Length: 140
Image: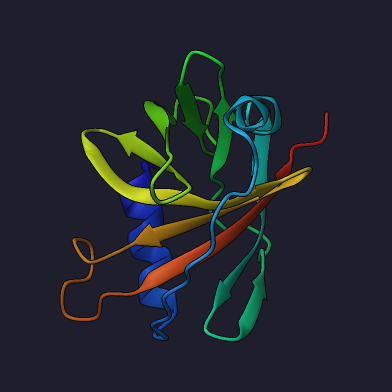
């Protein structure tokens, strides 16, 4: 399932709008070390509500590489997309580009956890929402 479809599904399931302004407080050299791993969804936060992964929910796994690329995969091994990432020093976020779109940013990165913020204005123009998804390092 591509990223846009996953975002649309999550957006339709929840109707709370929330903006988050966090930043990455690592040195530029440390970002690559902390980021370049395999990551899986841990939970999402919408408003003040923490929402755990539901059994059978769509998967969205990331593998970040030192060459500033990443691979996004789902449950089906054929479900694979490649994108690029870049650290924005000004906003202190990592911007992800997938299929020519840059609507996802990593707004927090620390040992064992990263937080992505997805803007769904294109997928749900009548009810735009930002979704905060917390990822953990993928086991195994």
